[in-house]
Image (tube, rainbow, N blue to C red; front, side, top):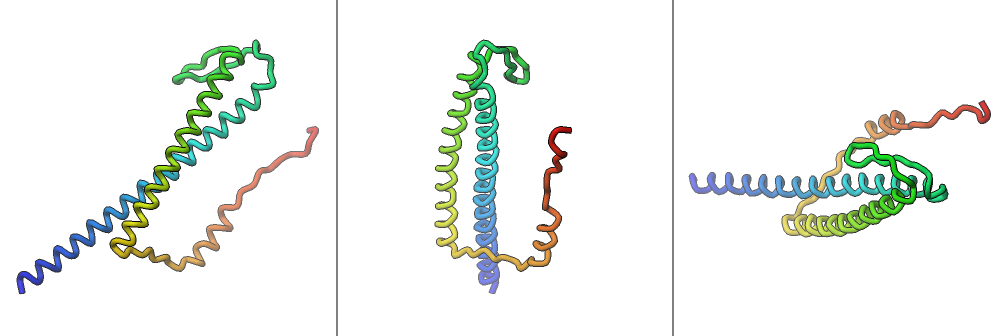
Length: 145
């Protein structure tokens, strides 16, 4: 009888280790999603800056933040650097998408191996309340005032 009880304890420990490993894998995947979203927002900001300064005179002064210091430069000096940064960010995003796909595949294989299924709770009443509270808008005054 003692050996049987010990076996049940080990089974529970293994299930807990599997659950923790699975949770860690899901956390890593969510962190990848978050970082990709953050970098995509930065690419969007770079695009806005490029779009704003590209049509301007290349000898015009502009300011750029470098390592927390605001530096005065010309558009001719800044524009290539901003474009390089944007391209670098896009490369990083592409690599992170590949890592995300690998992580999704790893999680799927882990789910199949250990027969993991995700249970979804029925929170219809909560979702309805959240949808109403999250609606946001922008208030714009009439033109010409």
